[in-house]
Length: 323
Image (tube, rainbow, N blue to C red; front, side):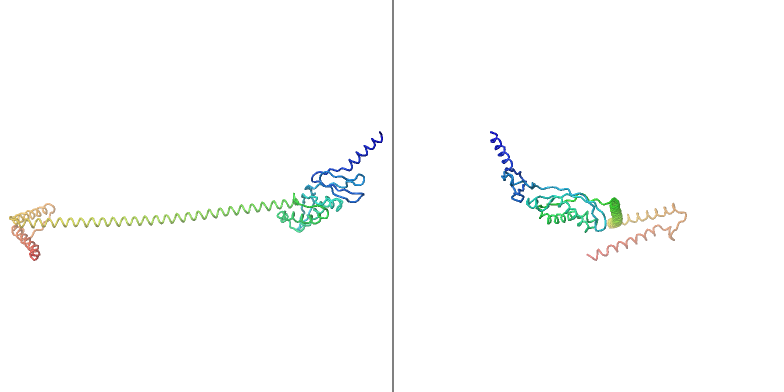
């Protein structure tokens, strides 16, 4: 009975040491009698108890590694405190087990030395502008060296670049001066544009004003010209109407003379006008001019009638010629 119990215990110990369950994204390195034998894949695996032993356990997941901060000196002899984070993954469990005694420390130290070398080739201003270039240079250097350790370096990211306080103060002053410069430039450009706009507006206003005055003068002269034309046409029309009226009056007088008793009527009219004219002279003036034969009214009337007959003969001459 005791022997059976001992045998059962040995079987349980043997089975527990001979069965290995490997999780997903993990790898177990097995040594047989102190020498590398195999790498167990995820799942259920069997080994020989007391002959094979589990030497190393590796995770095949991507691992973030915080690289401690360090002081780096730039090309222009400026100190920078730099820290970053490194992402790597175990790709060869065999090399990761036997290629380095501690590949994590090796990767960390190599990342720090590579970072100091890359920053040492740059000036201070470039370190802030070329972060991506620094990250690529560190990854390339680490990936080449980490291959023998069974590790793949995926990427490196700089977290902080901290210059000394004096440099930070001078950089702040430079930024402030640059912003003030831009503000002054923007203000001067605004004033320039404002002056240009004001000058342009004044010039356009002066042009519009001169054009308006010119157009006003043109309209005024055109109006005066038209008014003068209208006055001249009115005066000409008035003269034509007066002339037509005189012509009609003369025609009517001539026609009346040709009728029976016309000469007697003319003699009477001329005598009345003669007497009326001398009467007006007596009323309006103290001095009177009289002809030598003022007493001979009949002679004067006869003289006027002879002159009227001569006028009638002259007026009738063209008519008889036309006949």
